[in-house]
Image (cartoon, rainbow, N blue to C red):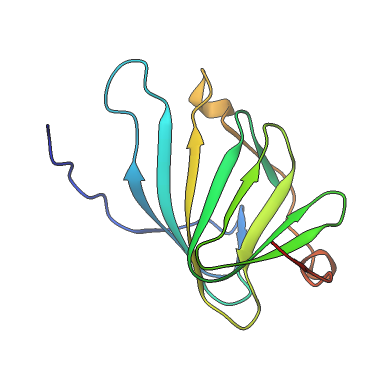
Amino acid sequence: MKVLTTPPTTKNPPEQFTGDVWLDPVAFPQDAGQSMVVAKVRFAPGARTAWHSHALGQTLHVTSGVALVGTRDGKVVRAGQGTTVYCPPGEEHWHGAAPDSFMEHLAMLDNAEDPSTTTTWLEHVTDEEYGRPTAEA
């Protein structure tokens, strides 16, 4: 067993996020053959990711606040504390906080064989896309 050193909180870059978003790494590969990555991500009200996809999919678990998760087909789900949302491999999506609520989630994924291809970042989510009507998760 080993106790891991806690890396510092980082503010996510504006090229990939709208608004204020902070990331705390939770788990990352420790030994050969491992690929799991987990991060605690905190979003200010209205903050969100850009459109993106993951080579091996992504699981989001909302730990506090209200999350919005959108897909290219125009669907936006509203997910509260305790809700888990899965985005399959290659699905272009975005996620962030509702306009009136801070939100924190655990983001869980596996690195691709080439970690640089794990996440494909795309364009920013427009205010119109962010403001679409929501369905409860």
